[in-house]
Length: 205
Image (cartoon, rainbow, N blue to C red; front, side):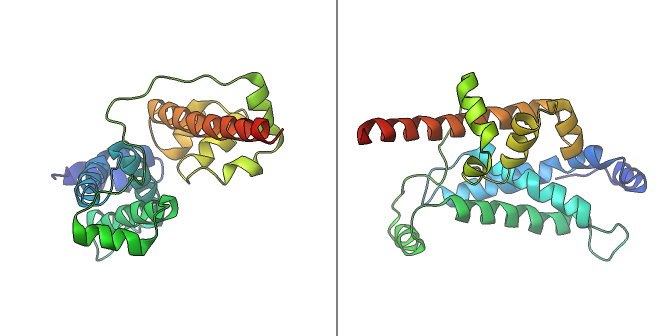
């Protein structure tokens, strides 16, 4: 992937004000690694490309914050390790299938249930009730642990603290649209949790 070296040098010279622009400049690196990871994972599980990109974006932002321009390692090499590591760490955290079973599936060519739900087409927006929002706001720690690290900051900032998505997007160095997509994913996961708990209570009563 071709990176405009002149633009890259100019943006690093304007760090940290250029953080968001640098994140956009290196986005092709995230996409390329996500595609490669998706192909590798396809042998043993269904995966969601968009989720891999979200995980990689976290790794990219961490790499931007830790990298020191002018060192012996080019940023594209440095960030690649961080992006790949962020994806692998989150996949391992989310995977409910034992590692031994995954290894057996790899050897036999069996595709197991996905690490993430496959979603080729964006899902429609979902709505939650005021009661569900209040339940989350009153005891957020009970629910935040069920969200991956790409969704927790959105839940904390937008739902608990009531901050505008535009402010969070600026802080994360991304577009408002990306925060809105993360917000929708966060709502789906929390609503699924709320409703499963509600069904469990009904069955127990």
